[in-house]
Amino acid sequence: RLLIAEGISEVEEICMIDVEELATIETLDLDRAKIIHKKACDFVKTDNYKKIKWDRYNLDDSLLEVKNLTAEIAISLKARKVVTVTDVADLSRDDFKDIVSDSIDCSDKEVDEIIMDARDVVNSLEVKES
Image (cartoon, rainbow, N blue to C red):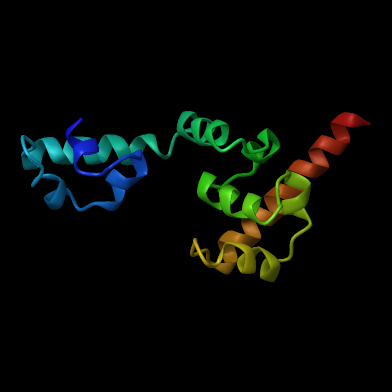
């Protein structure tokens, strides 16, 4: 409740705040702020968190198979009608970066890995279907 009263409504917001700033919240000392910060940052890296975000934003489950594709990136892609793993696999690096550039900073290497992994997922799905 303390965090909500401070305007923090998402777990990932805790990770964006300096531990020292968290410690300024009423009743939180530095040690407790460090624990909360670490637990929040660890949680946002889990598959469970990823699935929660997928469900909240009604993202295509096939995208869950794409490594390094965060919910934030998937939400940006969905806003531009890129909603399936096949849609991602069909993108070029430039197209991908044009879509997500306003909201997310991705290196060329990260983008290439996401696209190539999406292509691998599509290929594995096609093999399973045949």
